[in-house]
Structure formats: structure tokens, C-alpha cells
Length: 211
Image 1 (cartoon, rainbow, N blue to C red):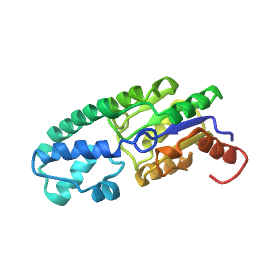
Image 2 (image 1 turned 135 degrees about the vertical axis):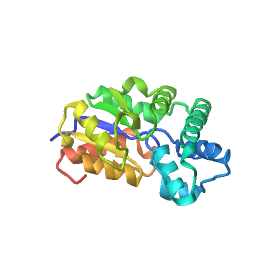
Image 3 (image 1 turned 60 degrees about the horizontal axis):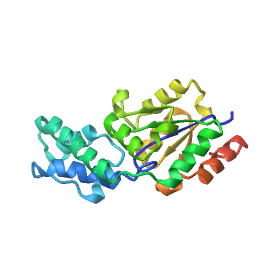
Image 4 (image 1 turned 90 degrees about the horizontal axis):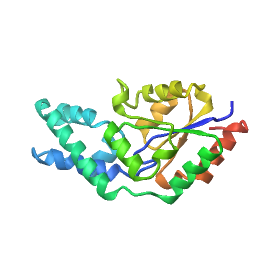
């Protein structure tokens, strides 16, 4: 089956936002004397929704669960402040999405972030006009690494999973993408998300090569 759609993760794929989430969460946690090291953030917490991170902190470091909602709310507020200041268009991403859309590929985003963050980042990066839709962790009951968000995206596209290429960067997202049955393009950084690289993967799949 030929690839007809590309579904992108957002953080670490279209937006280099890992440090933003790290900074925002620690600002919120610091209000109560808690902190996540950069190593733990990258190795343990990367790609997980904030509510899951807070639950892990409660289990591992006795963070009071009564503080979860307040910390989560503050983290989202800090994230939006950082996004507003730092999120800007990137030429090679705009070029990639505009070319793919012009060639007839359907494009979407499926992110473990909350809806407000997804919408603002896509608006600030000038990528929103190229997307058919966006999904956030608020659109599913189970976040990545569960495949639900990609299953929902594929169903919304009304395509077979093998007609979809999913672009992901971290183990939780990759596991979710693989579980959906779609083809997966694993990237190391946002710079790998460019037109030439994506087209090379699509051509390899359409030509019967390996994922």
C-alpha cells in the first residue's frame, strides 16, 4: 500500500520543546521543594504526559497527590509562557510540510501534550495551515506508549495503518506508533524532520523496502 498520510509527534519532532517542558515542570515542582534532574527527565520522563510524571513522583519520591492538579496547572501555564517567548517558525519544517501537502499527502499531529500547548506551538511555528487535524493527550483515554492516539488518528484519516507514516523520536512514542500498525520513521532530532528525509522513507516503503 502506498503512503497517503504522515502523522507527526510534536515535541522533539516538529518542535524542539523538551527543554521547555523540563524547565516549566521544574518551575512548578520547585514551588514545593521538588526537582527532576536533566538525566531523569531525558531517560525516565521523556514523552510522558505531566499527570503521569507526577504520579511517578508520588510513587518514587512521595510527592503529595493533593498537589497534582495545582502543579499540573502551573506547569501548563509556565509552558505556554515559554512557548510564547521561544517558539518560532523553522524554514525546513515549513518547507517539508508545504511540499508534502502540495504533493497530496494528508498531514496531522498526535502529541502527548495538552491541547493548548499543541495549538499554540503549531500556530507559533506557522505549521497549522498544513495540518488536517491535531490530537492531544486530552483526546484519548490512554497516552503514549499506548497506541490509542495513533489508532484514533488513523481512524480519523479513514486509512489503513499501512497507508500511514508516523514520525516519532522517543521510546514511548515509538512503541505507540508501532502498536498502531503504521510505518514508523524514528528521528534523533527535529533536524531529521525535513522533506528529503521524509520522502526517502516514503519512497522506500512505497518501493517495497524496509520501514
